[in-house]
Amino acid sequence: MLVFPNAKLNLGLYITEQRPDGFRNLESVFVPLPWCDALEVLPAPENALTLSGIPIPGEPATNLCWRAYELLQADFSLPPVQMHLHKAVPIGAGLGGGSGDAAFALRALNELFSLALTPEQLQHYARRLGSDCAFFIENKPVFAYEKGDVFEPVALDLAGVACKVVYPNLHISTAEAYSRIAPRTPRHALRPSLAQPLATWRETVTNDFEEVLTPHYPVLAAVKAALYAAGATYASLSGSGSAVYGLFPGREQPPQIAFPAEYQVWDGQL
Ligand SMILES: C[C@](O)(CO)[C@H](O)COP(=O)(O)OP(=O)(O)OC[C@H]1O[C@@H](n2ccc(N)nc2=O)[C@H](O)[C@@H]1O
Ligand SMILES: Nc1ncnc2c1ncn2[C@@H]1O[C@H](COP(=O)(O)OP(=O)(O)OP(=O)(O)O)[C@@H](O)[C@H]1O
Image (tube, rainbow, N blue to C red; front, side, top):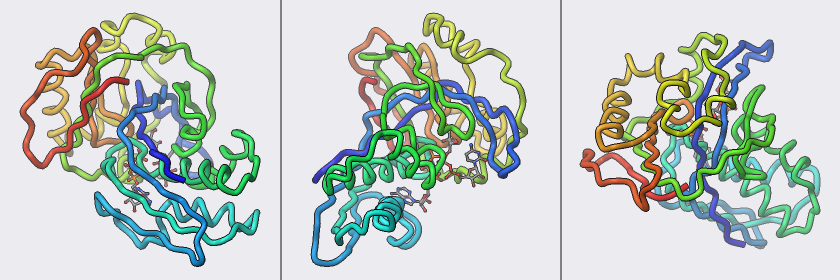
């Protein structure tokens, strides 16, 4: 079975409270971003995980695809599988790339072995693999809260909005980014702000990580400024960075912008 795990963007991200378990409560709207890896899962005589594309730090045994298999294997005595992951979504980018791989692995194994797990049951497994992971089970725009793994539906139609996502070749670890942040009450309520025309978001929809990360990584502000200079109606850091995106409504494709060759850039529509 071949699946294409996509990434996500955060539209607004507010870190609101420290939790007793060491994590933070947040508020954000997650939307799928069709920048994809490729994951093949096949029954095989022996377990194996092979990798290609962008190198992934850590041993293959710690890969989130593999950890997804181990979770289901423990409960359902799955037969051995061979997995191949081709990595295209940048890592340490705030695009949830690893989380998407894990969730798509759970979904693929559920289908391949006819486990008949419901989306709620799959989300339960996904939460054990990472806070972002549960979003990718249903993979549709949602208002996310608590650890970013509890959802409410959101009425938001960005279909056809041109988008440019820029990864400035800078790995920011999620744990490091969270360690720099002090939780606080959002200045603007997120859902009412996103219900207003996109042209108003620049003033009202923000990502708390930008303020704390930009002094350490000025490139984040430079990329955002380049997106606005090229006509973006809205631009923001995604997640805990380092990817910065721009939205260009009313265009088929975003404009070309000259970034250094080592940056990775995704152009398309949401
Ligand atoms: C920044 C976001 O991408 C926004 O969508 C996510 O909150 C990150 O989610 P993620 O990468 O799946 O994060 P996890 O793998 O669960 O956690 C990595 C580390 O980030 C911190 N973390 C993460 C999520 C959260 N709600 N509070 C936290 O404090 C914790 O220190 C944790 O050890
Ligand atoms: N399939 C995978 N793809 C990417 N990273 C993986 C994968 N499996 C395990 N990892 C580990 O997860 C780390 C990346 O997680 P990190 O949270 O820093 O980045 P991210 O997934 O780009 O961002 P975020 O989840 O915050 O949106 C890597 O350093 C790697 O060790």
